[in-house]
Image (tube, rainbow, N blue to C red; front, top):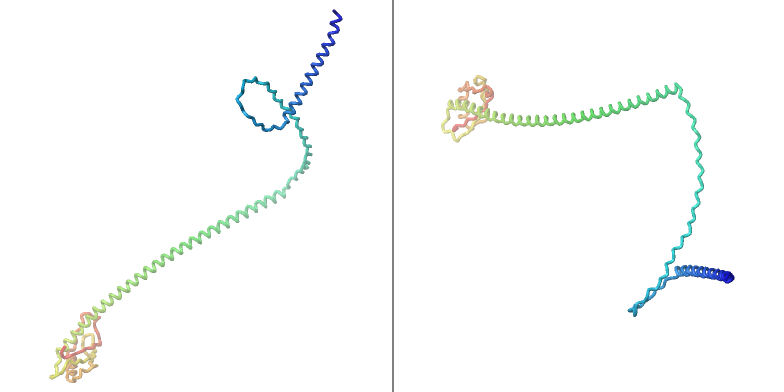
Length: 268
């Protein structure tokens, strides 16, 4: 019995080794099949459908291949460190200004301030002069307009006064002419009252005499300037003029006329 157990152990070992080899070969074949199946180009397949004659048992589908892990990406090399820029050399501190430099700088700043102040005052003066000139110009323009308006009004008033004066003079002249005519008619009427008409005088001839008189109406000269053509009638009128002295005086002294031109007709 011990000999049989001893001879059975080597046979079991060979069986296990053979089984392990078969399993490994099957796994390797499966891997090869999976890789080949993933890389195979899929071709179109036409399928005709028919009614199944009988219910078929589902067949076991192969497990989908597991995704292969991607190879690790190459990491980029780190950039080389840039050299630091050289630091500027520290500047030397400027020397402290001397008292003379401080005074000079103060004088320059004072001169600059005075210059700016002077320029500002000059600009303000120019602006003020400009405004004053503009104001004077506007004032002169206004005064010129006022004077022009006054001149036009005065001219219109003078023209109106002249028209009124002329009208008044015309009225006065007309009134004076009427008064003088009335004064002459009064003189002629007095003289005619003393005229003795000659017999058989023909027509209505006219005789004109120039008479010179004094302010009192006394006649100092009588002159025939136009004969009526009838000597007897001319002489009769001349005797009547001398007889009528003194002549009637006018109502107003300004109507007196030293020289008179008197006209006579026998039928008037």
